[in-house]
Length: 183
Image 1 (cartoon, rainbow, N blue to C red):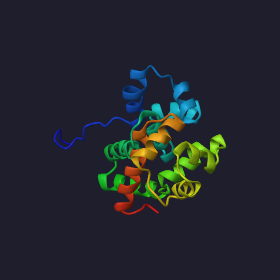
Image 2 (tube, rainbow, N blue to C red):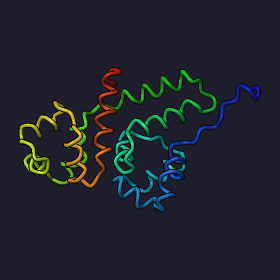
Image 3 (cartoon, rainbow, N blue to C red):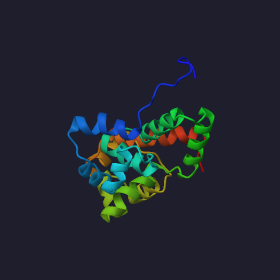
């Protein structure tokens, strides 16, 4: 292989997580694992570059660092594309195959699964926090309506997140639906 055809090494998503997100915040593995709701071993394996970013990891990291889910999945794809010994097309196919395993979920469904259900929060309680009717709230949780900026504001306040997190989830969902669902 000549110097011209060598690919530049691409950082593993775990290294990017450590260097660009954890270290500037002086965050320890145990702290982040607790915040993500995963084991220390799982996170340590990711940082040690022995594990890929999963969809669940991407959701948690997007929430914690106010990024998008697709950002973390893109980091994994970029790393996969640069892996020595694999052709780029093969890496793209592997990424597409991995993505098919992840059901595309509306942000309202993620809201239920990751925020309300673990807290035992009812639809009526969320409706009160949002200042919306229970009917609207049910349709949001079923993925029948979008997260608007005002709803994102109240969700951020209720669940101690950022409004950008909720708007990014909606934007990512809309973009992926526009390009064709993965299921």
